[in-house]
Image 1 (cartoon, rainbow, N blue to C red):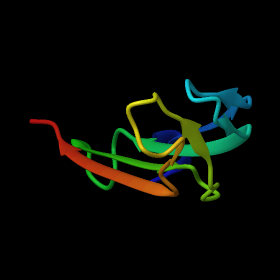
Image 2: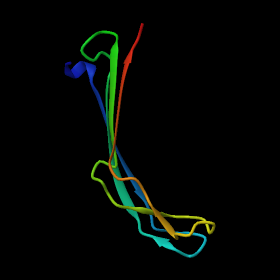
Image 3: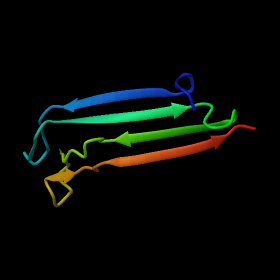
Image 4: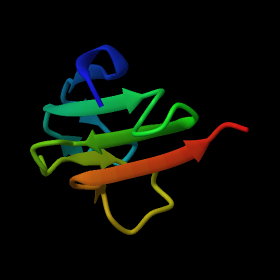
Length: 88
């Protein structure tokens, strides 16, 4: 694996404070994602993806509709996603 076969992408998502239907308030938050992609990982036909969502494991909440018992729902922390694919 060398640098010409690796793509790196970063992402920053900011969401401002928001109110739900019940008047519940969720604070603003910022999360960062990092994605790596290699179309030729180790062998010519093997591709690889690796992604880190919510890279810094930020704790954040989103307001919900009034049919839920909670007024805000906690969202996922760090999620690591990997994929290998072989092209025939």
